[in-house]
Image (cartoon, rainbow, N blue to C red; front, side, top):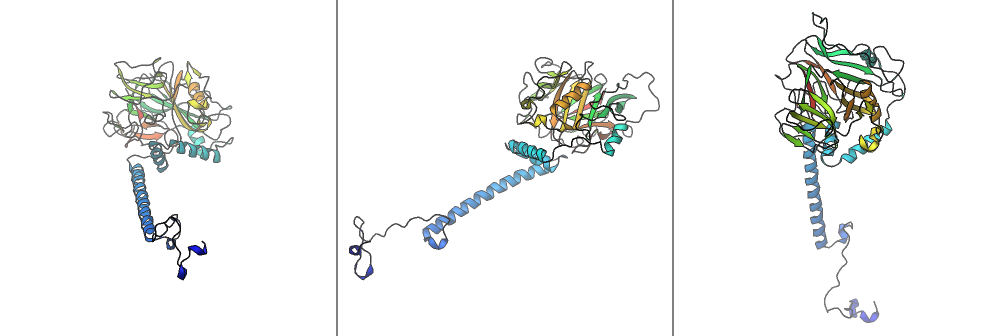
Length: 415
């Protein structure tokens, strides 16, 4: 400022071009400046912005909290970890769940080598069996299956040898055995179950969240409908987020889309179950009452499919190569059902076990600790309320289908 622009008494003269008496506009200070540097108008604006941001945060936090709270309190036996993962997938955060699972896997990979723990060894030696009735069937309609050749040699005592898991009228309708899944992961167990296709009937149940909706078939096995129950197993990848790459059909209603080429469990009015490629081996006919699709066949024509190591087909990223809990189901040439669950299986080792057990066509179901399951039921004490037993110890208790089930499942009854 020049001396010429200064008025007597030290006052500053208006610069040329400014109307006389108008004060210069103060520069607006940024919101993180100290409040002592703000004029009253700026202070009011700051308070308004703060209140608005706080209101948005409170509404957002409250909405998320309410939503998460519902996920943590819905009926069923799902763990807190499983509920939070399902909530994330419901809110398009599945990629976060997948990333966390991969990080956790890399930080805690499955053990290589070693021996089975004592409880697993005891289970392998003596599979829990339904007590044999007083009268032994001289010529059983359903004989015990010949031992399965285990992937690891030499076999441990009881490894690959079938025992009765559940039966009716003295017939072993459900049989099971235990094996080590491969030559590297010898401290883990996989369980193989066999179910008679001729003397059992199969029913598809919905889950109340997956696929959701209203069906005549309940998302549980309630009291009064348990007589003759011999087995249950889990459904597959989620329908509602497209993870299964297929659809779900029950009671004349379809969730997702029944996709040609998808591996499918197909349930018929007579209680039979067929497994195959939709549009090739199985299709919609008047006697079809249920369809559950999941990915593609892992075993076809009695052989493991050539692209079993294709990571894009059996999960996200490289999950197909991870040795994690998995499950799968297949059918033999005679129409019997093979079910495999394991603690540390890759896509290949799951497929190999189903093929070794006699499946000519087999498909993946679900993976990770929360979802794979196979339960057999002992009706010797109470035929109307048989006691469930997990074939392997997973996250949910054996009575998971006696309460509201989050996801769909299959129930098996004696004919």
